[in-house]
Image (cartoon, rainbow, N blue to C red; front, side, top):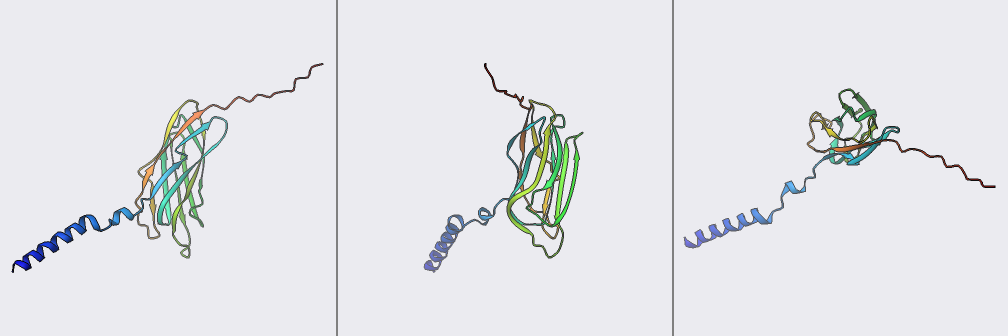
Length: 181
């Protein structure tokens, strides 16, 4: 009887130790899908258009996205939105409101023969121009943004916003040759 109690207690100790220290955690092996503004800090001028990219990292089975962002409308003007090429053969929907500083870009693949996309890449391209100089404004993801699989189920993600610094256009000087006689 004593041997049976000893064996049961030892087995409980060994199983507890394995559970705490020896078994790999399944949560540690799951990559976290990330939406990221790239570059994290960009410069925009008042005279030329700048492109910023919304990248996706470590996504599985992506079929559609809806990215909604806010910005300071006094500092920036969004001039265009495009699909970044990560998803293809689909439909693009965009809306820009430079008066309130908000835009969205949505894209979904069309065609059941297409496969959902897994991996990392460029989701959307944001084209913008500075309205004023000397301002630093966040380009922030709105909580309305989302990712989904082919069945319409949401894909969890974390969002990393960016910052845009506005600058004036550099003065252009024309240098003429100096001719001495």
